[in-house]
Length: 253
Image (cartoon, rainbow, N blue to C red; front, side, top):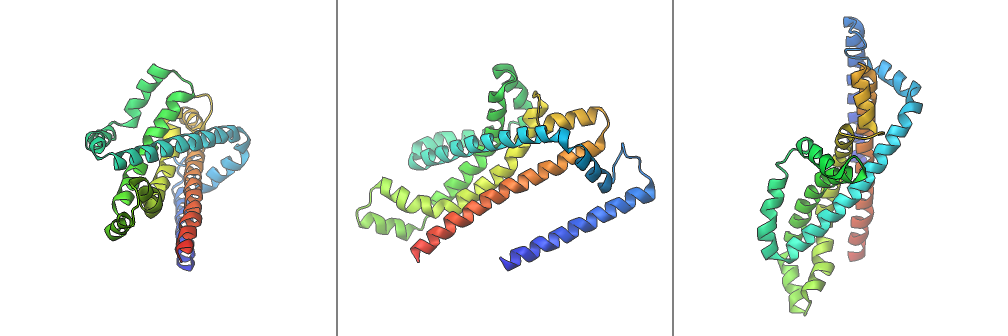
């Protein structure tokens, strides 16, 4: 924990150094605000315009969390099915890999044409972005179960169901949480992309309006909150990982 806090402190100091350097370069070169605003201008706009931005932020947060929950649940369910049914795995797993080669920005307009401008196409986009890391990480975790432990449980008469719930799933928890952390950061990106293509509220809508009016300071405000939201979701998943994985390790002791 002490090492992690030290690394986090160094990262913050380096980020602060970059912001100071950015501010100085903007002031020295007299770069116009509409082309590249200084960090102080971005912070000023964030403080002044937060009342207008607040509704967009809440919309993106709710959309990201809902899409993340659906995508991760579907991903975990698919990984369990593929792990428990090897023949199904042989057929579907290559198709899942191929599905990730379709750019989301290309698929999103088709989903809007098929399902309209409501909530459903947005949730599908976020779920498609989130489920694949969970599937891959979970299946790797299931496969990496110690063979000697699997052999021992079979020797004492454990069924395949007991083998999965008592051994393979607990053993795969660190890998599953790795996939969840990746999906958490992707969920915000998926939400913003879905909002670009059709929404009344959201950070993506706010960013589009700011770009069209050359309010680059507002664009950077949106980017900053996207980063904070991604880090926040990542932190929540990491906290849950510490509680669950640490709790299981203490039970084993």
